[in-house]
Amino acid sequence: MVLLLEMGDAIETIRVYDGAHGYNEMHRYTRSEGKQAGSPFHSGTLGEGMRAAIEEIEGTYRTMIEGWEKQ
Image (cartoon, rainbow, N blue to C red):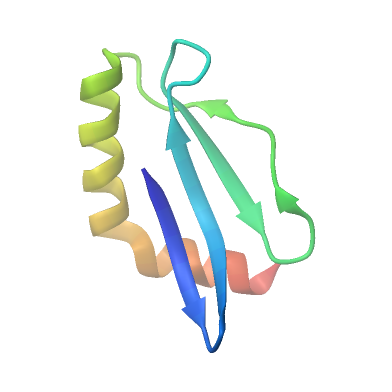
């Protein structure tokens, strides 16, 4: 699951949720430094983690974008 922000002609990555290492992980992106180290996100199965990521993005995407804009 990826949260993207369209800014004119550019598209910026704000958050990435994945299971590339066999567990649910979330990566924050900052405006100044880009991708940050991943942190465990959800202790359930990968499917449960992706559903939780969708819920989190739907509920807090504005806050996530504001955080990205400040950094």
